[in-house]
Length: 595
Image (cartoon, rainbow, N blue to C red; front, side, top):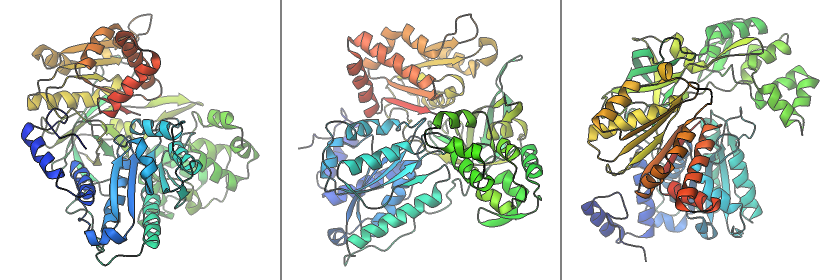
């Protein structure tokens, strides 16, 4: 029998816990399935799907929608699938991989898996435990399971959609039957995901005929909804450089007016940027294409120059683009790079190159405008962690942006969104934005819980939002920040904020690491190790720990430091220390927003 719900084992108050416990004990399994989807939708501000009648559920298929999402896209698609499935009279269980007990797999009959790939082929944090389980010795036979996988990824990475591919192949290996072929989605996933959802629901309806009480499809969502296809036009209020004079980098603090938009600390602001006009013109000149050639962009025909400026990705060089271009160019060199077994050579070629380099190295005289844009993917929005709390800064959204500028192969390279915001966006301008919710990066529900925050560079942005929020609501929990950058005098981002909060007692501890202020470089992970005993004591006291920033090196180094701290202070071996961190992650006490 399930344990009673109390204020001791939940973030609820005593009264709330008693009310919820009384409610759920009187619900049927079907009612609890619907309630779980309803609450998940309310948590994201979504409009829940209508309840499913008992009559319809008896005769229709039941499906478990299992999602693993790092930034929130997978969760949104899972809710969309759940809403549409319920509207068709299908019984739905919607579950994050973070909350899923792997042993339940043996009892599943129909499974829809939506999972993203993080970094170089890694599963998102919430999916790690299940990913390890299905690939381990304890994985059960799944001969009675039907499934389909929607994989989310970024084709600019070598191991594109790898986690989705992993789940697809291992479920088949364990004996499950594939209901629909896996679909791999790039950053512009909407159309491909919609087709997969429609096909899967059609397959489920084909398996089980409609019952007499089936619910007709209903519109999802009401009122104005702002997303990447329907952005909010936000006025820029401030655009200032955070670095001191003489800095060798440029980091900006940008404030937007966003009355009517809702967000929480931990969410991100999606920005729909424009490509560099000089790069657009260089492409047009190289390809010898007219600026006004009509091409399909979005839902309309637009002049080529406008399409390349606002609608298509023209910088990042991906394998799919290279393969499609090679087919037109007939290049033996490109074909060789794409050949089996040449992954290292391909990776070396892609590094530091952009689309302009390929079209200049392998010219295609006579290439039509429509042919060229057909090779491109849509210009994806760029996500920036919100550096503000809506409670503390009503109707505003703040972000922290590092302007990306570097040299490669004799060319100056510019980050699309970062230099657009830094160089071409001024106070008074409007920028198309939307909120990207991130339920995997949230402050503790209880305001008395201590938190440890690790955020070097612009990774510190969400922790400014965290402290603004905790100050505004009068949270009593202790707060400890680890911050790092290059130089104390030029790169101590938001220095006056941290020092004011430290003086006021809100920021209990502040440990900094400025890597280039001494001969021997020092980073945040070293500061963590130096405070091993105190860090472990905070964790033992129930602290939540958050890490934000670079996924390539920093996140792994910080994780290794935490594992060593737990092992040393807790007298555990490496495997047991890793289990300790997994348990923290499982209980939402170890959360990462890494990119």
